[in-house]
Image (cartoon, rainbow, N blue to C red; front, side, top):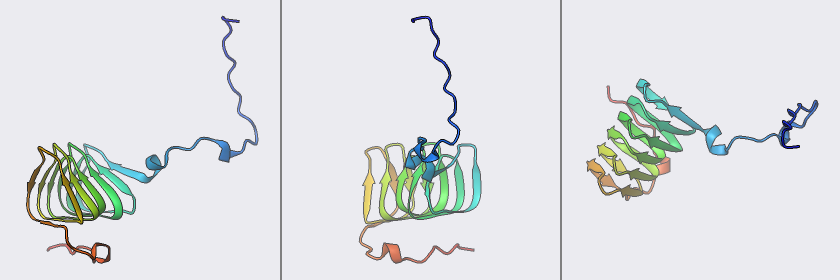
Length: 145
């Protein structure tokens, strides 16, 4: 009994695919820009996004979460539901809900959000406007030419 190897499971023909395990919802809804990726232009989406690379231009994820990783370098105007900054951001950010600058994060630009959280050790240079009441009704950002 102890020396027996388990027999491999055979697929069941006609199995109900709804009974198969599904990946966590977060794993299927989040997009990622890797460390080696450089984007010069607009990043516009309708899902949560993690950026570990470099973006120069504009980032717009209205109503969704943006995580700027510790190795990320962002030179952009940013609009999202929630913005978490762990890397370096140069440019103005607008959040419908909140901006969270973590310990190793740095921000050089203005923040427009109803809630702003800044950890001890985070760097910030700019202005904060947390009193705007029409965040969700704003027009898309216009690019300066």
